[in-house]
Length: 403
Image 1: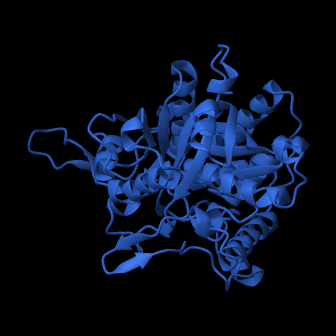
Image 2: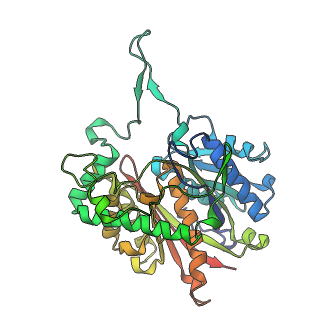
Image 3: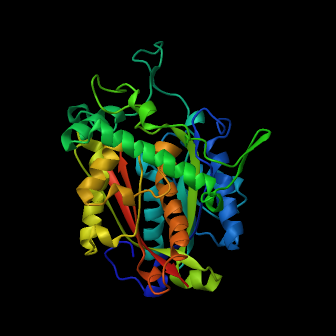
């Protein structure tokens, strides 16, 4: 159960009973005309349709977002999805961790407050994100536009993401060869998953003008080691982090249904992810990519678990360097993580990415249990990990249940 510090009635433990996402598409690409609420609303509607939940029974809609235009995106998308005006909404901003932290927050709200039903997840439309600017110093001065907000005070360095990835690669000895091999594996796995239709059950097609977008557009079948080897350093001269072993910006939305174990059984759902706990940790902002390792280590220690006991691991691959450094630090074989590829192939939709991890874990757990003896699926543990701008990381631990 979530680490609330209070005892929770076992029948009220939070469980995730459904999870869906949009296709993840390159920013400026197939979904470029859709605003964030237009990405998210079809996912919320589809979750209610899939579970048969009356929209009026939803307690709250908790949504992560990093670069949107403000207001209350969760409320906007909920109403656009046809939820009644009685259902409130809340936006969470922990930058890249926003979608995962929204799921964690909704789980804690349920654990603290009883027997509700929550829609939680994240969304990002980088293509339609508003321009941002500070007013000029003088009344008639031009506004001062900026591409990203400050994450920490200047004395902490506040490096750009790619520079921070280089810092991690140097500090933890992650070679260019390892980074490129990890990126290639991500694309190969994602292409194989797409070919086998393993993403189809979790993906909500979106109408974008006259086109219906059904598939992720990032995985590259033609990518190989020779092509990756030709990419120059992208952020630091002579460095090892390149465009080939870094993620690309993407537009996406993903959300889950969270309710109590008792309510899940009443609804007659076949399975769920029980939320066991979570942790968010702070680290040196100069090494922000290592944040997930700090959070994951504390979380596993608190539950008395060894990394080998976790059956499924989804890590947001913003950069191969930081993914490898975190997995190494946690003692998790990188071959065991991201079985169907990750953000290096699919793209990084900032506020949506953490929720995509959870959606992938539920889909993978369902696929795995078809190969496990009936008594073993009860012990299938799943871990979501994401590093966060400003020097943070969030980890969430789940157990797969079949009813």
